[in-house]
Length: 147
Image (cartoon, rainbow, N blue to C red):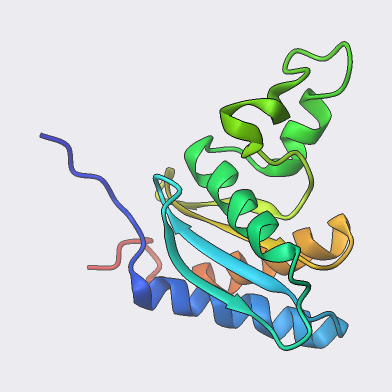
């Protein structure tokens, strides 16, 4: 039997709050998606003014980051012509995202979820995703164990 660590709704709220704070700081209303370790949606927020087209993109960025256990910008580099993962963005119905803004959430070395951000530039999306993770990790006990 497996014991699989995963985020819960409270954790997702913390991630959302950190991402929202950074998005407000930079003045870009974002779509923010939080998924569990398997890429299943736990929470989503479209800030007032977040792009409609960014809803699915944010969800798929979070999905890619958690399920593939890899940041989406890393797939962007690896999916270029001549690279080892060229064309991977067309895998699983085109759901794998290769644009920055999706990050896996690691706790004690295990991927427990992911965050996906969309509506800004790739650099803005990634900064907001990182802010969500940083906010979450800053609230964890020193051992990283939630008890």
